[in-house]
Length: 295
Image (cartoon, rainbow, N blue to C red):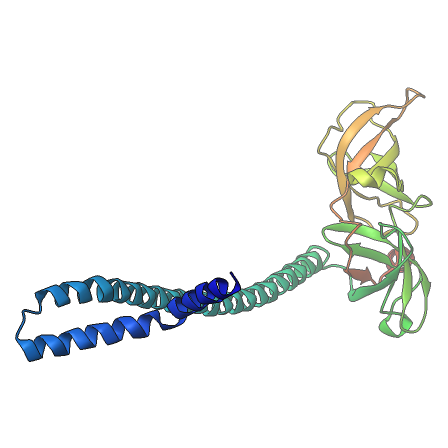
């Protein structure tokens, strides 16, 4: 039994290891015998075809598969290269777009400053940049990078965007502190452009969330002041020069005293994103003194 098992293992081993050699030897021997005896080669050709053709087909299939794999690899590599090139192009375009956006923002800023300078051409001004502010979202109190050596003094009025921002409260040699009109402690004597009726514009940090300011003490017995009316600093203000734009009337109603009116204004100034301002270096007191001297 043991010998039979070894013999079977030998046969299996022989088939798996030497089958191709035996078949090749058989084919060669048959060809030689055919040539020597003159017997037709057709049967052997048929047998060889049965043996060799499948090998050829397998080899051909493997070759096609390897070709396809190589092609797919090249296509994948080409795709990777194209993707890297595209990403580089995107990075370049993104950087250029960022530069263009910055240039556009700078151009818009300079245009706003120019227009503001033209609008208040009668007043001498110094351009300044905000360098710090109090904690919070709004520029209710902030510091600028210009001071007394630049001609800035306490009570100088400050404008930005298209309107009044606030007033200088403290000055150093190369810095100044500004309290804006949205601060809760701020009060500005104002008047309507169409009717010259006076009122008080008060700071309200809660109301500024809506981009608005509050006004009170408006005497308008003929009901001529309507929504959309322009409001500017008045001629009777103690600290603000006349004619600085504050905002448009957005809401108006009769006060509880039934004599005056209260309401809200829409300010043209973005008090959440202030960056550059103009400081008017002439104070209201200077204007009063000049008028007195002329008289």
